[in-house]
Image (cartoon, rainbow, N blue to C red; front, side, top):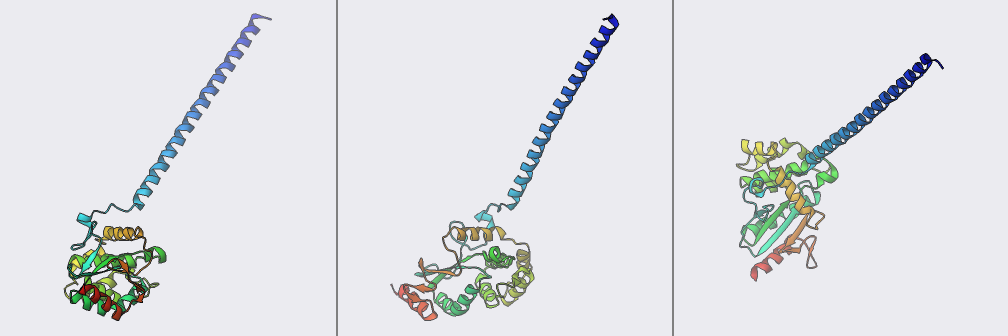
Length: 258
């Protein structure tokens, strides 16, 4: 074989080796870029998931700044009405949209208020808002926040009675419109103020409303109204007797006489 032919073969082999080296380097770069791309996608997904989780997480509740004035309990989730020295305590868990709560209130309100005015019973209200979660809408939460706004200026009891007297049908969710709640405040002397309107529209006690509902979720109770008399279930019955205006009066008077 001539030297020229041998040189040509060597050149061809060299070019082949160089081409293979270039292809290997290219393949390596592609793998590196692919790995980097996958890592970036994973990081982006992780960031997005983190943002979504954070946005859906309820803000931390701080009783010192998030609770309305005059609330009681370790976390200030309870609204008290009446003389704290009363021997009988009526604990009531209610949802503003709850029709059974409306029925209970409209039947028992005159008796409860009379016993409270006579300093024979203190009422401790837990304003829950789970019906929004089951039926959709925002009337429960809006109503609960409006009640907290009223409590913050010492008008809870009167406004509470107004809301249940004017409670819309559960399926209508009329209180999703905050202006309706503000209009009802006109029925309570001294409540219809710019400050109250701002509190309702701004959902000022939204964190407190969520905290009260979270507490209810952990309580073991599952429906409203839940009514306890000195810690014993009193609705629909108390010690084997049906809840009624006459029976509640009898029960409270018996406790008061002890």
